[in-house]
Image (cartoon, rainbow, N blue to C red; front, top):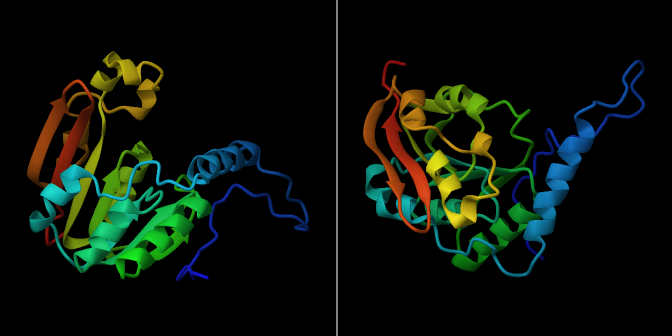
Length: 220
């Protein structure tokens, strides 16, 4: 049986019982259903997003720092495992324990190790100046941007790719919520206090995304 190196049970949206004066959190039902939704998606035998890393990550690995890395919303681990294969010490964080179990299995298949953290990102607090690299792919939580900046070491790099509002004009994006899409230049503005190594907004018949690679100043 495969062993997950570490599962930190944080922020899963579960109410705490037996504590005097504490009732259920009104957000708990929503958070549990979000966890269950992703667990249901990831419960299939196949890897729903495949086992290959995001093309943007793979194409730019030579620009990134190969130290301690955090993969945000890691899902089934395709990017986390790839980073580990490149020599990074990887923490993979996601709300889905099933997704992360598959990530650990994929790491085992590839002969590498990743550390998994089961957590609700709307509640999780990132450690300060912990990571050389933060990867964020196809997950948008705007109030997480300050935490990404905080958790990077001075000189650390963020690589980020997710949908823009142009995705809503594509057939596959018709039902996607605008709140989960970046406005024009929004991602660049998030990291205007970083050194921008690469920024691009891409649209074709399959996707519409914004991409950034940015470095935190050594003195911040």
